[in-house]
Amino acid sequence: MVIRHILHYLTEHPEAKDTTQGILRWWLMGDLVEWEEGDVQAALDALVARGWLMQRQTALSHKLYGLNREKLEEIQVFLRERENTAEE
Image: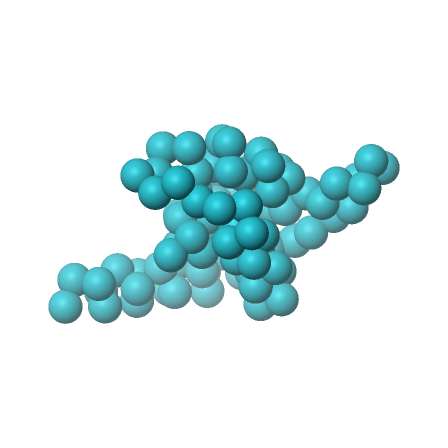
């Protein structure tokens, strides 16, 4: 699930901000899965809708994504719950 991978990256690098392409290239490059851009974009859109990511439009019409630090604790709970579920 790409959402978990993005959130794990952001909890380890809470100041990170990047475009969809940058996220594919840098945030997810160490994963064993090769993610499709459409899947990553859908995950980013879902995380923005949930309020866990902030989205900002740049002058060149690129969207930058970064962590909503106010939601960090909620994100950490979500990740712990998913890890516990995966272990069962």
